[in-house]
Image (spheres, rainbow, N blue to C red):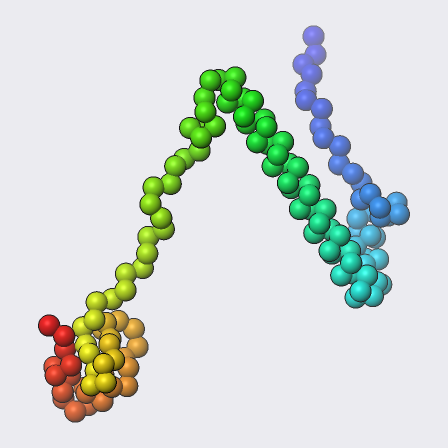
Length: 129
């Protein structure tokens, strides 16, 4: 008794609407089109991609909902719940305050007023306790 393998998906040798041309020939023929036609093709392709993706997502949601129902599981239980948000970068604590109210955390490039204070030996005057 022979073991049957799954049928392999058919791969289109020539894209639909390509006038029977192989993919390489179809793409090469795009070089001959004016910019306006290429833009129109791109817009139509973007719209088609969007509608096909939306349909695939709908089908996937339906399939998942059916399988979850068959198992007696809520779909929400299948999706990992995010706790909290993305970790926020810590704004450095102010370690130096300039003569005109400028602030510097001591991280990153040194501002001009810090460089001047260092040159004059007065950096300690601007340190925030």
